[in-house]
Length: 527
Image (cartoon, rainbow, N blue to C red):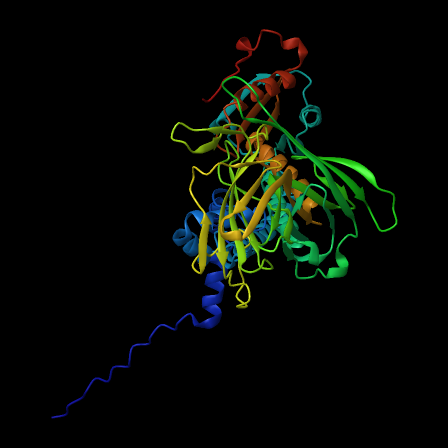
């Protein structure tokens, strides 16, 4: 007896995608229209925190105030980059992915649309009565050429054959769709070019002081990767005066009306000064470099004498606005050169001061109608020799002894002096100035971005309003008569107006002598 054993081959395992296959799959997924829409939504969503939280590139003083008001939350927000949204890694990643997705999606579609535009309309179907729009009528003398000429007058692209005419129009719909996406791609390129070859910075200037457009003059400076110190436009200006106008009476009392900064501008070294009135949304433009007015506040001036009667400090102190309604402001004065002890002051500036019922003092109007300053004095070691950086808006009172404290302390009016106890010196409010915060930016992609935004709107309008439609006609010559059969359809959804347009086409093809006889000529609509 012979035994045979069946030998089964090992099943062939399907081959994996491999590195190339996975790359192709990832590229197709990235360049799909669905992914582009998702990334566009994420890009818009990623921009939202930039309008919710103050940004260092725009309002560094507001960021400092946020750290002062909510230090715990500010610490985590800073770690997440929410104070520098538009320069954060996660925003840049979303930006680059959206750019790649749009490029990979638009380029193939543009090539396909170009082939579609060059292609002639398809020949007429045999049975036109099955089309959504259909009509037949007798038109003595009608020919294929005359029908094609009528359709061309209505801006249809036509092609003729033996006894039939094919016409099509509405290519602008897909053209508009592509224009929208190409413009969006160009917008991203313009923003990227601005980030590479542009720069922006912030500076705070007190009335009477000047600014020269150099790196050292900025409080915060953010250059592009291809920007050097020599790239900055060499202009300068002096802030002569700042005026803020508010509503004085009525329910809207205290609301701002206008802000105006009077500048004396020198466009380049050696040029003649020229006046310029800087306002909100009316930036100073010097050869493409824009200077924007973005904030303002008060900078009271003080004179501090130490225990020996010597002037230890004299000048203006910019205060951060603590109350946007009344412009009650807070600032810090550090006097490390005072003897025998260093002096520190916390200042509460009140633009329009009135006494409260509890004995304290408050401001009731943002304008400087009755300016005063409440001063809280300290003496001791300011810690400025330790080498650790300190904020000019904060005073560490850990190693300081309080000299003058209490919210009910009578504030200083302009010209009044507060003697410090123990012979530590005195402080005098000598005047009130105002400061403005400016953003100075050079963005070479600004105009291209504006043009791209306009083209994207145009493309969106075309894609939403233009319909792709086709019309066919067959001419049948009989004994003593000529029958014309017309059919049409739209290639896009949501086109209810095509029925009316088709009726107008039929009327034009029948000729002006048809009049009201359309019902007697057998005009029929399938739907």
